[in-house]
Length: 237
Length: 120
Image (cartoon, rainbow over all chains, first blue to last red; front, side, top):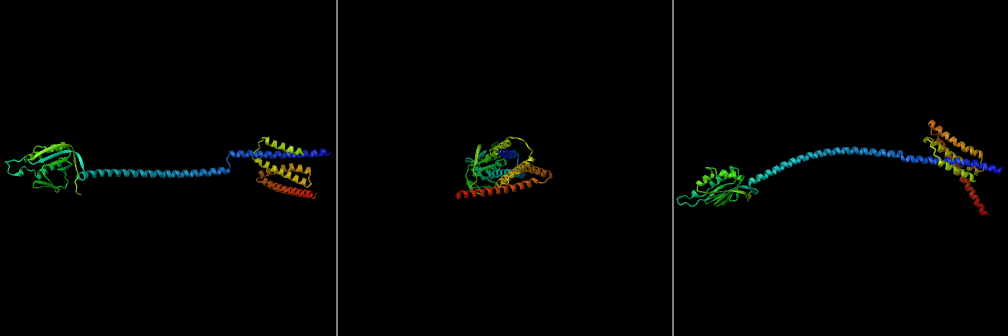
């Protein structure tokens, strides 16, 4: 009787234990599954974090777009400025070219080009002619040649290698002529840069400079040159 | 003595092996039922140690408490009141009290045993 009673008690206990074990294990199992499920899906914290990050991203993108717009505007401005600058540079370069050209005309720099060379020499001594002035080269002869050359388009002229400028003067000073204060003896070599054909034609004009000079007993030698180099005027501002 | 242990093991195995799917909203009932079961178990152990153990009270209390806790939670869900919190609270407090009593009883028993040994 006692044995059965003890056994019955144990059976009941074991039943209780079975139920308890089952419930605990099932609950554990269930919770574990829930946890696994939650791991795959987002928890609220993660979701909030994601949302926060997304908002930040959106904000940054908006900022980016704004900055991009600003950048574009600035780039446009830069482009405009560059255009202006290039225009200015162009103007400057043309100015520089002009300055160079003017300097050439003024005789401040060395110039080079094709042109003609005219040599004026005193005529040979003629015993029938008692006036020596009749076969000497005078300054007006030189003037004539120089003027003729300028008129026919010479861009630079030198007498015996000395450049003439817009305010040069030539005076007759006895046996020599003075160009800008520097004496030059005969023969005078007048070199001019310009179109040689035009210059030659102008000088050889019938009744022109050459004929007049030859009439004055002056030896006139005309030469076409493919390259003439004229040095700048020294010692002058 | 081995029979309850065997029952526990079989129960755990069954719980782990069964793959019954229950809706998520019933997980509250399950947890409260587990709590009730644990509470009753510790209550039974305490009663046993205090020599006032009654099998009928224990067994009936075990099942009745489980069902009551689950139904309380069920009622709470349907009333919109978190009644299962009350159950959790009550069972939790009682669980701690029971465990404290068990500990004290075991301590006194252990100390008296030690004294006895020393006396001998």
